[in-house]
Length: 118
View 1 (cartoon, rainbow, N blue to C red):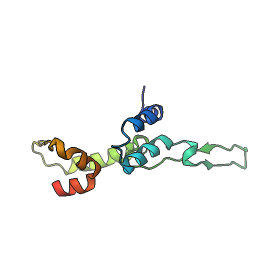
View 2: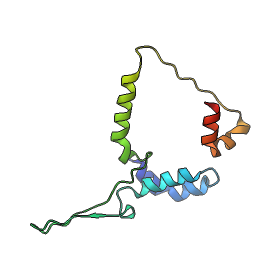
View 3: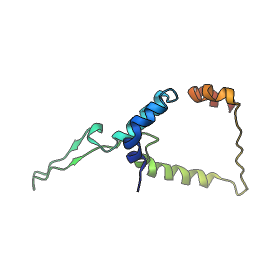
View 4: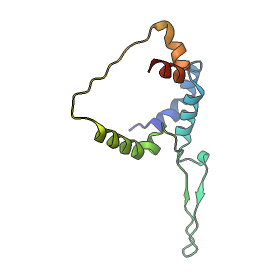
């Protein structure tokens, strides 16, 4: 079974080469955090039991909001909370497409674009 982390580790260099011009610093940071999560790259927490001399090492989570291993529980809690707030009516999702000429600009200026559009 594949995980996002294993795919990111395996294809990171190819992905970054192919999409280098399109990746924002936020995307790069998310990818790096997901790859480093629960690894020595994220640091280490050392424990030591004086009684039995057992010394396990744990690697901390990254805590990034896009990391599936860190945010699964938080996401499920948020989703349950949001579902409790729903009214008992039908909901519809509306999707619209921006003109081709604006897509690259919007992709590289997402915060401004979403604030402006919505």
